[in-house]
Image (cartoon, rainbow, N blue to C red; front, side):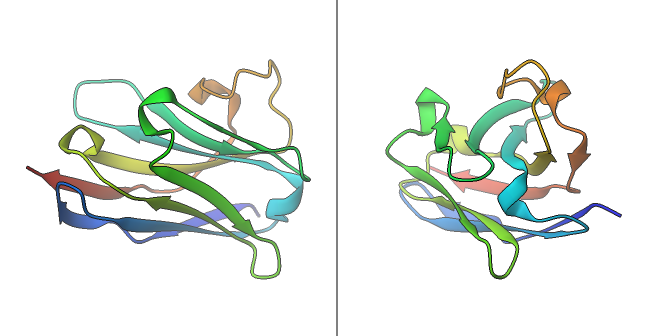
Length: 126
């Protein structure tokens, strides 16, 4: 059974850092595309970052490039999202997502992912 358990998050001030973790079970993170999305109340899920299966690279939404880093620990089956220089607009509930093969290759679409974590809140104050 595929399961994604998230940890990390919390409240920080502008310019601070946080690290989110996504611990997977039921599959190997090395063989799935793993994404991070965020959502604020009243809005749809926004893609943040993707780490592609095998060694096929990473993608980031423009607003987080240079500040966020997605990485994978294959030995421990965990994916991380390191978030630096956080801004108030980064506030939201962050979700870890996974899929063995993005059907349409549109990593920014939440509909591409079959598996979701429960989400963790990130709040950045100014």
